[in-house]
Each structure stands twice: as structure tokens, then as C-alpha cells.
Length: 118
Length: 114
Image 1 (cartoon, rainbow over the protein chains, first blue to last red):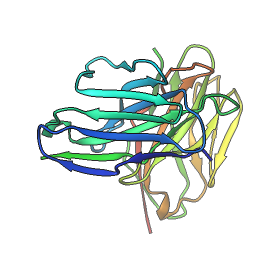
Image 2: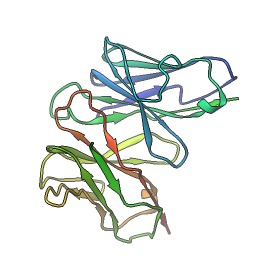
Image 3: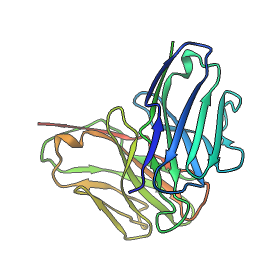
């Protein structure tokens, strides 16, 4: 089946530092990747849609200068949380959408990254 | 806009009980429908899906049937196990919609006790 990995799985950083999270589709190509944020016991909140080779589309209320997204290839997207603050602490999850074929509507999710900002 | 409504939890069942988690949707056209499961501390895993009316998705003993007439996609399992304890999300996306993200329900937490 389609596998999406995220790295790191867990990160603790000091306030003011930047953190990069990688999302990779391991065995398929993904023209579109999505980044979500999840607070405890809540559903996923879409942050942005990332397309290979173009600028990401951010949801309303998400600061694009704070959450930098790069989708450099068909298998890799990165989310950088710049100048992180404690309120950015959360569970970040990426997903990748299959580029074509019978599973084209299906999104496959990474295992998530737990960010804690001290 | 498109939306998904699923029953609020938490749902607590004894092992081997029958499970139903209701999900209804509002969408233009004919969306694809999904159930995802999230175990504690993990990302979402695709549980099953259906892409057209009357399709039945099934996996690991779970089933859901795409009901266009009632705009529903209820999740069922005949006999739950403790290992099924997780949060279940119903979701939809427009078919062949390229960049359109999934629309999620709020999730239903299931706890199965021995």
C-alpha cells in the first residue's frame, strides 16, 4: 500500500528557533500534499495545500510567513515552523494524494510529528 | 460547501459488541467517501472507502455502504475488539478533484473494554 513518512516524529525546541518537518511519499508520486494541524482530542485542521513546483495555498488564518511550505519534488514536501513559540506546539500531520490511477482520490497520511516548543 | 457530520462520542462498548458510527454528508455531485482511523499518538490510516453509490467498502471486519438516497456512509463492525479502540473519522472528497482536500467529520472516539 501507499506509505507516507514524516521526520522527525517528535521534536522539542526552544522558543524562537525554527523547526523543519519532512513529509515523503515512499512508494508513489504525489503531485499534491496537504499539511494539517491537530489539537488534543480534536479533528484535523487543514493548514495548506502544497503542489509540486508551485507555491502552497494556505487556509484562511494560517500565516504563510510563519509556516513555510516547500514541495520540491513529487515525493517530498517540507513544513518549516519559523520562530516557533509555545502556542505552535501541536501535532502536525501531512498527507499525500496519489497522482493518478484508480486511487487518485485517496489521501495517505504520515504518522505525524509532535512539536513541543518550550 | 461540502460537509460531513458524524455522531459525537465517546462511544464505549464491551468486547464483541456491535458497532455503528453514523456519518452523513452534504456535497454537490458524487463525492468519494472514506473512513480513517487514528490510534493514539499516530497519524490517520485509511480504513475503507467507496467511490460511487451502493459501493460497500470493507476492511478488517469494518464495513460501510455508500447510500446516495440518504447521503450516508455509516461505519459498522459486527464484533469489536479492544484493539479497535481509536478515533474514527468520516471524510469525503470530490471525485477527480485534483487539489481539493478531504473534508473531515469531527471524529468519534471509540473505547472498547474487555
